[in-house]
Length: 311
Image (tube, rainbow, N blue to C red):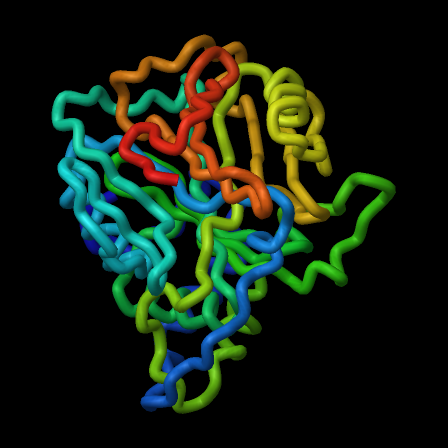
């Protein structure tokens, strides 16, 4: 896509309501009312949750600028070749510079997207207005029943989701399986949640988190078995043999794993960009890190430092 070009393409999700999104470009509110701080999302209160993500990048400075300008993260620290960004004082993303890295290959095991969870529906509405105003290219938008989400891609091809959750007590469960779908997103209703006279998007608000991470794997069933055994995640949704969703503490998913682009993928080439590395936020347990590598798109690391990520 050309820089600054406003395009809604069906490259990651079935996008419906794009005309409504473009039409809303003339409805930006005017005013200076500061949004109120919201409580920490349910996704971060479960026994295990994702605390932060690390990425390897060929151009770390350009990547950091994108995550500041588009996603709204703030730079928190620099440590050697690693730039740390987050929301408030909460670190969410570490970008490790590796100019010699090869571009990622979507046919291999790796990252499908990092999902940044905003605290409220109004926050998502503010981000949508920001996307319209800045003509940010968006790949798709969906109502997943449990959440409302928009999708985009960073300069080095890593997927991003910006979303908000519906109240967790409104999710529908059939036994141990949560109902999720891909339906039309009511963008107008989301934007309408932004109060009149609101100051608008001021960056990712306090208590924004990494709600979940979605991975490309070679075998979703084998991936689910690994996450079940290694971290005690529950399998809460399956889509045939091509995708599985896992969570802790009744969340709709902290980890997604699909083989839509990567069926049968083997060991990941560690010299490529992306190389997602997650921080595990285990309440009441020692924190640890694990790097996503190997034939299933991951490999247990077991230490509090990996790929520039300090957990």
